[in-house]
Structures are given as structure tokens and as C-alpha cells.
Image 1 (cartoon, rainbow, N blue to C red):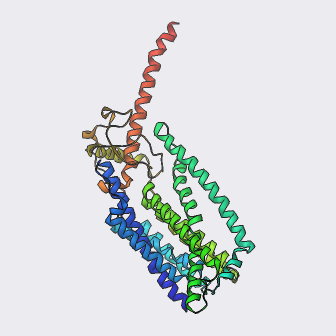
Image 2 (cartoon, one colour):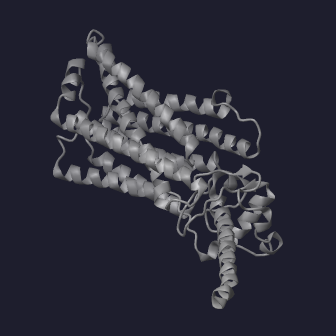
Image 3 (tube, helix red, strand yellow):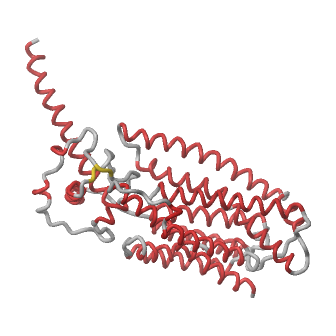
Length: 423
């Protein structure tokens, strides 16, 4: 029953990793607030939140490393989805995000998926020597997997660069489609995970070599042992760097689940193929294990932010635009289309380019409205900081500006009509 020990250690490690990630995100959130207030930013290396998060994150990875020698990688990688459950708690306690019924349903769905995986997964973990690990790299199935991952990484990187150019161009004119904006963090997460998850396979390999050495079979005399250790260090540094950059670039409530989905998926597939953990699966095991993974991803999808913008939210939009102006913020000129979610930009001081304060909605009239706020949305300074209020504020400012443009065009047409009749 060694796999149960490995599973228990892995669960604790996964919770620590998620807690550390949220503490590091807290540092970036606090810096966003300082940037909006035009105060001095705090470096990550001098931030208590970031350094504490990094220490807890490292401890969680150490625990996960220790668990690798006790259970199959595909099982442990799937159990890593417990991070999504702890993420809900930490987002509420650390970043003040509300817990809705949708989140509770999603959490229950993830639990069901994990139960299915634990019951039907391959629990055993074989012992390997350095020479045997080298042979596994020569297997056709894993070589095909590496080629596919390499091509997908290149494609996703190209798409990410292209989408980034489109998003940057939106600051000078129109706004790209909503799906394009969502595609950017997804591509970033895929590139990060496809390379970063190699560290999981390498960590399990290192764990196996360490265990064999402790048992008396010295693996330090084989050259491939050092190749594995160097490659593991490189991929771990790559993942840590990309993770920290993602937390700084994108909204935490969206990018953290996306990163963990990609991490979980490629860890399961990569480990299952490399260590041949899927070879002994029966039809029932394959079906239920795959179903469990799908159920987990459905639960993760349900955890994603859903902030619909429809006709009933126009009053809320105007109200939030007034609130943001009263706090001295301006919103970059980007609108949110119907049914869309968070924008990519933060608030800055000063008037918006091309839109004067005279163009703003009538504050005295707007604040007289009595608006009930939707479930899960609390319009306060923290939500402004995290970006939820941007949806309403940007839409109100855009619609007001768009109406002015239409009125100007109608006036120009009316002014030119008599001249055309006289001619």
C-alpha cells in the first residue's frame, strides 16, 4: 500500500504549492494597487508575501518529489487537481474573491473526478535504474509524444506572439474579439506546461534513482543520472519563471486554473506514456480513468470566471464608471462585448486619451439608481483592483463615446443634405 503514502504526501504538497502560488499572486496584486496609486513598487525579493509564498511553494514541490517514488505519476498528477479545491479557499481568504454556488458545484465535481481516478488508476510504481530510464526514452510511443509536444509548443508560441500584437494594437484603435483575448493566456499556459511538465517526469526519474542509491544500488556512477538532474533543474527553473510571469501578466482567478489544467493534463499523459503506466490498463480502467480526468476538467471549467454583460447591467456599468472616476482612475479605451469577461489592462491615473471628463456620464444622476449587485460580484476597491469592475466601467465609457460619435455623424449628414439639394 505504498501508493497510499505517496498519495497522502502528494495531496499535502499540492495544497502547499497552491497556497504558495496565491501568496505570490498577492504580491503582484498589491503592486498593481501601488502602480494605480502611483506609489513605489515592492520588489519580489523584498516582499514578505512573495518570499513566504516561494518558500511554501518550494516545500510543496519537495513533498511532491518525495511522493514520486511511491506511486504512479499519472495517479499523482491527477490528484494534483486538489489544488483547485484549495485554490477556492485561498482565493477567498487571501485575495478576497467570493465563493458562489457555482464554485461549490465545481468543487464537488472535481472531488467526484478524483475519486474515479483513485479507484481505477494504476497505483503501483516500478523501480528503475539509470540505464532503464535511458531505454524508456528510446521507446517509439514516447518519441512520438515528444515530437507532438515540440510541434505544439512551437505553434502555441507563434500564436501567442501574434495574439499579443493584436492586444497591443487594441490600445491604438478597435478591440480584438473576446476569444482572442482569452486565447493569449491559454497559449502562454500551454507553452509553459508542455515544457515545464517535463520536470515532473524528470523528478520521478530522479526520485527513483535516489531511492535505488539509498537501497545500496549506487546510480551516481552512470552518466545519464547527471543528465536527468541537469534537465530537471532547467525545466524547474523554466516553470518557475513562467509561473511568476503569468501571475504578473494575467488575472489570477483565470490564469491559475488554466496553468494547473495544462500542468495536470501533460503530467498525466507524459508520465503515463514514458513509464508505460497505461500499458496494463483494462478497458474499464481506461474508460473510468479518462472519464475521471474529463470530469475534473469540467469542474475546472466551472471554476472559470463568468461575468456576463447584458442590457440589465448598463446601469451597473454607469455606476461603476462613476465610482472609478471618483477614485481618480481612468480606464484604458477598451470595451467589453456582450457576454465577455475581464479585460487585460489595469487602471491608471489621469484622463483617458481622446475622452475628456466632460464626456463622462452624469454622476449625480447615476448614483441615484438603486442597483442590486449580481451574486459573486462585490463592487468595492478590491474588485476594482482585481479587474471585475473594469467590465462595467469600460463598457459604459465606450458606449457613451460611441453614442457621441453617432450623434456627430448624424449632425454632419444633416448639415450636408441642404448643400446637396441646392446643387
